[in-house]
Length: 290
Ligand code: GLN
Image 1 (cartoon, protein in one colour):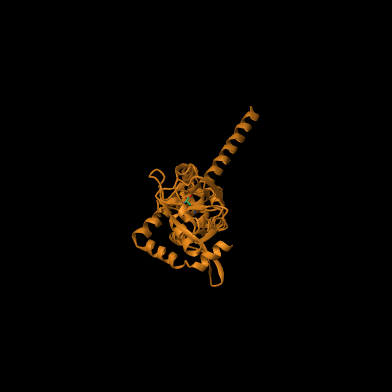
Image 2 (tube, protein in one colour):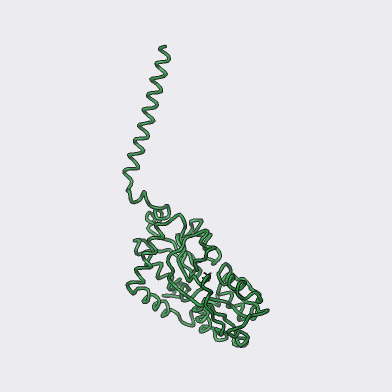
């Protein structure tokens, strides 16, 4: 009987201790800032480290490109300026990671970058794995060719048998198979390498977002943006948006707010002009020569 009482007392003590432990852990979490508690892990990491990491593929002028500034190779362009505004609104520094286009979304899902700004279209397929901001940039599609074969690409061409370079993992790859099934699509990792292959005659043309095609044509005398310029069909005409992890709705909300702010207060146009003013032929040549 005595023994039984002892056991009951022991159980009571253990239960009380466990209760106390639970209480103290509750008090601990109560002392944590309620704001922080609601944050996504990505937002917590951004705030704690004081920096936000953007992933991009920097051979896509005027949105992202390399330029020598004060003797230093720098990644700049419209997307980078927008990313700086995003960082500024969050009160943190911006870090840029340059990688191949087809690796960007995997890097985002793995948490190696906090958002992707790469002139990326918010397609349904990509929406399966990540979330997208409001659309902030629109483009047409253009076939870039050489001066010696540009006439082979009239506006109504079906590009039968032509070897057309596209950036691997880009919407251009899908556009080619959907709209130009008679052409042969060649997937190449970097836009800059597409240009090199076009110059050396390995491919006949390249499908690029329009401002990019026009800029490469200006910068490289032997290349021409052809008459084959088109708008995506409505189902596919999704412009460019910023990609964010599905686990970070608060980061997405902050990015959307920044985009809306810069569109409303005129900053957007100024940043676009600033990006254009940083382009010069030498710089794009350097890009291609790399
Ligand atoms: N807009 C195209 C896409 O989303 C290409 C983007 C790019 O090459 N940076 O796939």
